Length: 566
Ligand SMILES: Cc1cc2nc3c(=O)[nH]c(=O)nc-3n(C[C@H](O)[C@H](O)[C@H](O)COP(=O)(O)OP(=O)(O)OC[C@H]3O[C@@H](n4cnc5c(N)ncnc54)[C@H](O)[C@@H]3O)c2cc1C
Image 1 (tube, helix red, strand yellow):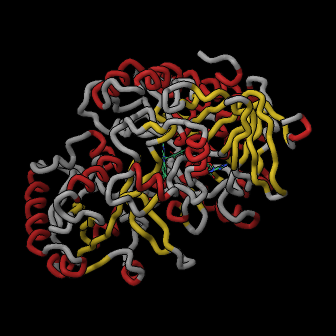
Image 2: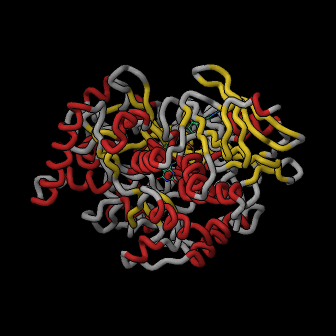
């Protein structure tokens, strides 16, 4: 192509404005390159906008400064136990090496700021090197008003994660809200966030006090805007432009027509993975293919499809294709279906079990969301476990909440009428309503109740892992995760497998350069985020397993494109 064939000239073209793509563009800009982001949706954020926003960065300085001891070496031991040596070992090595420095870099040079999580156990703390505290960080809350009119350009969280139709709450807010009549501090905090929200709603469609993943993507976007890095909305990357095998640019479908973009230092694919691509779902995900995905509808595997057309390889060497969560299907106020991911709020609490169609427990209910779904699939090999059923008393729902039903909900009728839960006065009636074996459920509950009295779950070890107890009820003893289920009415909720992120993705080298099927770099082409095969090889070591790598490899890709690869 001659020069005049280009509509836009830049150094780095980044496809996708999720956490990975925005980090890559921001770092490229900080390092002196011109960067342009093209985004398929009308808003930035992707899945990241709806996420909890936690990053797993072993040895980070934010936790160290807060007095928590951790090291990348310990984390390496843990990953060796969990994953072992495989073709992504070098990716993990550079990830652990660079992670803390990348976070410090962003904190120093941009508005992307983080807080230490302190206690936040790794998901398999029975393995050597696992951390209990100090490994996870979260973004600092962000004031969406700083974005002015562009606040609307930030994808909102899922409605199920907001209160009063638009107020975001993080874990600390939830604790304060639930304890608002127990301490003045909690009352003051609760009152302040509610008043702020009510004031926001005079001018904005939702609350502007952004937390978790929404704060992360808003901070990235704010930093990009400050550096005048353009985001071209509703402009999906559609085709590469190559010169003798090197990617030199791309064609975008924009609202004002097709635009050809020349990218002197390369094109970065950060389109969020293949979540809504039926072909890839069927090819890579377990059978039966998970019916639901937490990703936005725009994540249709465009990056992988385009790269494949250039001969890129897809890395299927890991242990699985998805990073999973059980989800329940909600009915939203507009009548549409939504998904609630059962990450940490309910499964570990005392007085809940999960059963399959035989009414039998199949898992320690308090394991990580990823491990829970893997157990669903294992159980499904012999007994129908898709969906699985969460079983508890109605009193449990009022106390702890269940899925999208908030704690303190006393009247469950609306949720019964919506089909979100099933309620019955006896376990037998509940079992027959949901089509689960009656004797099986009765026996499982009886056995579980015996364990609840002794505090030891002899079958599945609910409450054994630090993670279990972290998400349990510390006020309940002897085991914060076990309490008898004995008084009706009883409640059942169906949960299904879904992914919160794809783990199979493009084959890359540790600089994020896309590799062809013979492991040779495709010149000019990079991938990061979920377009890149997960360096955790399908396992889920701890909180922040995808956003940590998305940000660190966003940085590495940019550094390589700048010519500063390390
Ligand atoms: C409820 C929930 C909680 C989560 N919590 C965490 C957590 O705490 N920690 C963690 O590590 N992970 C978490 N995750 C997972 C995490 O959010 C994702 O793995 C992460 O956002 C992936 O980042 P990404 O940038 O690769 O993709 P995304 O965030 O999905 O962004 C991809 C972007 O690319 C755009 N796009 C798609 N196709 C094109 C195209 N052709 N051209 C241009 N743009 C395109 C999309 O519209 C989207 O905006 C969570 C996920 C969910 C759903």
